[in-house]
Image 1 (cartoon, helix red, strand yellow):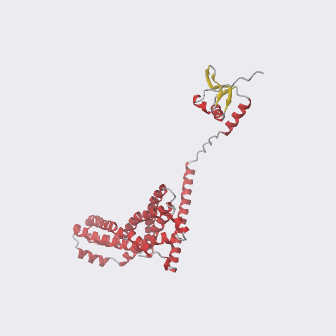
Image 2: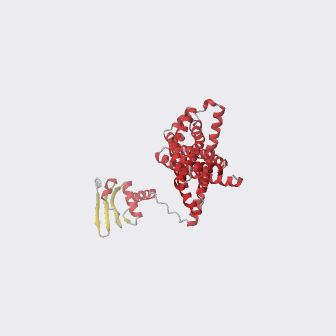
Image 3: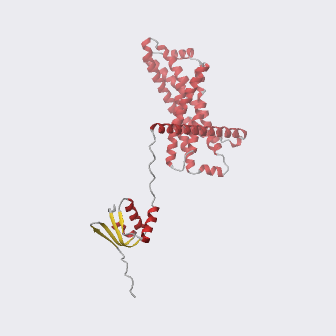
Length: 363
């Protein structure tokens, strides 16, 4: 009885006039020896054995346009199964017209804004509910935390707020004197400084500084606790995160921002008085007399009544952004920057709405 001829154990690659001829065994170990890209014609009649890696090479070559010859029977069926299993790229989506893309982006932005405002309203309700629970149960109120956040958001912000307001008063007095001198109305620079600072600029710029300083701090502190899963640990221990984290921070802002606004008003008037004395020769007693004579107390009330609303907006936006931080530092940085931008934008919009309201009611 004649024994079957032994199958070759290696792959032989022969270049011929009609293409490349493969013979022997085509396995994953032989792939580095194969030409890449595949030649236009492949004669595989001499292959004794192929595995899935070899079939993948042949299928890819066939898909690229190479002509395979000599493959029949079971190896051909095996190659067809491998070729069917190779994933194909999805066809590119059809080009969307520019106007449709613009409408889609506008719609997505509108829906995103609606969702964001809904979440802010939710956090406002959570703050009010937690504050009401603290009023009903004073033992749950965290006075130490409130004092700490009043120090961080209020006392530590006094130097930068006072310096900013002082410089704003100096700039207003200088620019006002330069313009009013042309009409011989230098004395009205006192009215310009008083109304501008007491009614608008004092509290608005203070709120903007606090928004940039405190909103980022709120987001970073709460976001870091979220990343370390400390908030989940609070819930496990039966502690209310709204009571522990949101109420002290927002309430500290509500208490300290009017004080910061009052300090900004005083330092802004001081800066305007000094520059008026230097530039126009308006002495401090004359500045004071003109201020008390022509400046109504309603301007002070209009300015300071905005402070609690601005503080509530800044606190809610900062706490909301902190609670939205994920488990990575990238989300922490992204939410910190977005909270500052959103808080400053919201403060400016609220100030514009206040201006329209007070103009309508005659204040």
